[in-house]
Length: 476
Image (cartoon, rainbow, N blue to C red):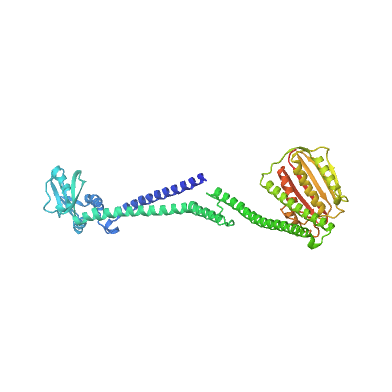
């Protein structure tokens, strides 16, 4: 991004420099045009200001043509005389010896004979003392050199030296100011377009993130590409985190509500039975009733104890504070032992569970008790939520460096909506006709245990066809 910023700054600076150079060039062209105009017409016709430099040029070129020498005397042609007379000028012609050979309308205060020093002092004297501004130049006539003096009234000299000079300076200052203003404006527009405007949009995007508005994020494809892309990615993550937070808050509230309900209900039962047992004479309980009520109270307290224990385990696994006791174990033996224990339970003696292993020994580094608990929860879930004629197939095998366990049944299946919630804490499914005495934490804990062993669990199911649960442990 720093390179892009330097690139656009360089472009801005070069643009400004080019505009200034262009302005100076235009001033130069303006000067040339003005000189060309002056060379053709008197400046007073162009600007209204009398220009001595023009008359110097014109008289020097025209004097030799209009100077007439007859019978040893100099004279001027009538058109040239009118030119001097109409502009209130005067003319004096001096030979090589400094003597006046011709003059026209020369004031009496000026000499007829000049030395080099006196001629020089004529130009050095202030024009306001003499009343005229004097200009001098050399001309050649009949192979002889002559010096002419051309006098201008002070009003012309002042116009030239003050008004003309002031106009010249002001015009160039004005042009430079205009060039600088235009160049600065264009440079500012360029800088604003490529730097300021995108930067302000980036700032607005940050404000939107702070206000949890994750949909209105600026995406720049020029100088701030990296910044805007990172902001966009951050917005996506924050938006996802917000949804998860809302979902988690909802789940937590439901979880707390369910836990309170599931603890309060058995506690109320336990309290009722204890009160009846404590008031034996009032209720006239038989020995058989006392025994039955006591067994119910024990079962309820066992349920509460199991619920609290599973909650504790779930949150320890979720917080990564549970210390796993991992050792090398034979997964085939773990699953065989677990299936045999389930089928020996009087409730599941009529169930069919098939077990297939790719080899007699598949070694896995695991916490044996936890892993047994995970598979026990999964198998019990399949047994509880299906009919007695449901067949469950369990297969374990190696797939390259991974260990795969597949638990398949031909039961009633699970809907897509239920699959999404199946591993959430306290979810019991939609089968409310059975009293399972479950806590709703079994599959959530199973998933946490499998993930803590560097494994993954996935479910595929179709209603009325069955369910396939695939568990994959990475590495042996």
